[in-house]
Length: 128
Image (cartoon, rainbow, N blue to C red; front, side):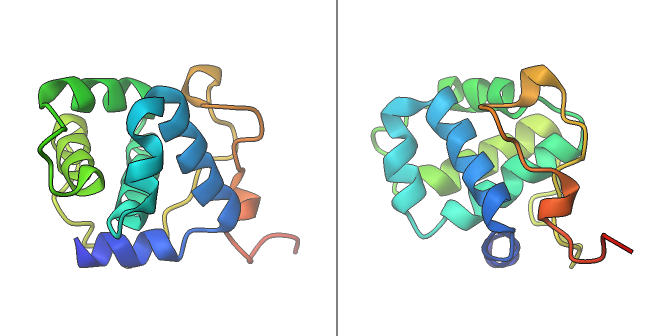
């Protein structure tokens, strides 16, 4: 979880905003609590990893939220990270030191809102 938190903290601001907008769209009743938790960066990284793996993060969130009641969760964000990674078939802890990036051409259904970030927002190697 620590590695995922670190990856989430290193996400470009537009990608963090994209992740927050996605969570607010998919689960408005729990979004603000999850975003305010210490595990939020890990959840943002996990949403990005799921997207990169070809999944629709909104669909995965819906599945994760219905798999377990969340009222008694000690940390909503950490429970969601675990469920999302399990449902998406992602490794429990991202072993790669690579920075997660949102693809340049996201599909319409995977976008939570207008302005989903492009890869240009997450790398500084562009513009050669």
